[in-house]
Amino acid sequence: MKKSKRLDLISTIVKDNDIHSKAEIVDYIDKHFGIKYSVATIGRDLNELKIYKMPSANNERYYRKFNDNAQNEAKTKLINLYKEEIEKVTIKDNYLIIKTSPGFAQSVNFYIDQMNLNEVLGTVGGNDTILILVESTELAAFVHYQLFGETYNNDVI
Image (tube, rainbow, N blue to C red; front, side, top):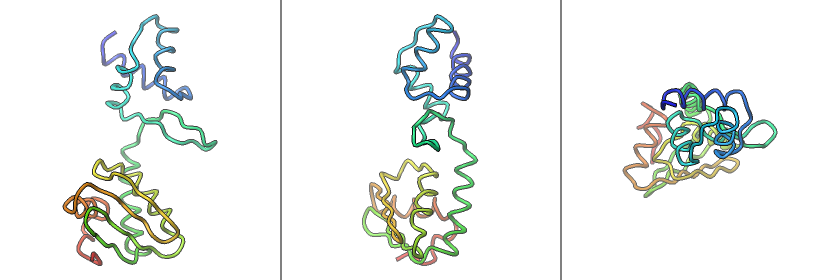
């Protein structure tokens, strides 16, 4: 099977089934099509297709296609939250601290995670504060720009 067909097949399998593991995809293709692939091959294909394990409503994690529109929507929501609920952003060394109105840190953190930025090593969110870890001070400023766009120079300490 050509790679393009395999990618289409994997997309369809993930779309139509609740898949928990790469091995399930390997087994599905073997059972229904008699073709054997390694888990590593399927893993590379999933990355290429932007298919990742994501939480579902029932707290299970299934493979789903990442929606690029979700990234754009997340950025739009972040910019709106920046204007209304984000009180201060502090860049210190290799991290950003975002201070929000009480109760908004989890929402802001959710949209930051939705942006899926490679430069972000991790985020931690409380009630009104978010910590974003990156590799360097320069990347911290860049991540701030990626998250909030042209609002970059307002309120940054």
